[in-house]
Image 1 (cartoon, rainbow, N blue to C red):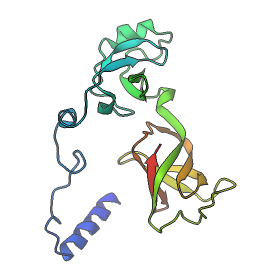
Image 2: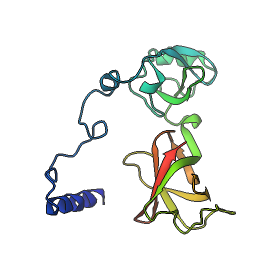
Image 3: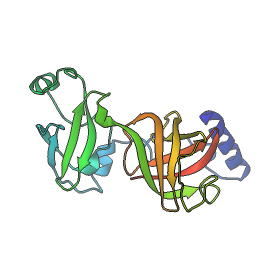
Image 4: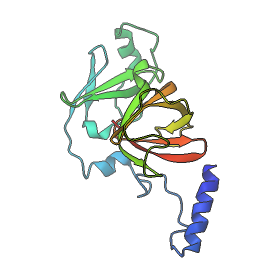
Length: 210
């Protein structure tokens, strides 16, 4: 479906006389092309190193700056000796598994890291979004006064690029904010990124995850 949509958009662009209708697809940083992510950010973001900790409080190293990491990130964390470190933790079930970014403590400038893709701190059953934008100008079938009970109509939401639609319910919506409850917990829901809402194949709109 995504390939068909891109083809249709290119055809419309060509018909409109836009010169970039045949431009190669970009999968780099926000359409500026492929380049080392951290090297690019180094030019614009301040470096404020801080500690990397586990949920149990164990210090595993130092990060280069919270702005250089995102929830669910695996590569580039810089934690070595995972088996030895895991042996020091209370549980051995994740020994040898990779480390992931699970959260940021802005006030303490600390990065929370966990071991194992399926660690519970990497999953969320709900999210709150703001800065809403709706294709129809307002939330689908809702008044801006909000909701008194969960919606029964099925919705789907994406919180990550190329993710399959995740079944969800709108449990609250007003002019400023949206609350979604997922049918199953979603992996690495990240504040600052977008959530996009669908009903079937219809794109409804979305907002910024808070």
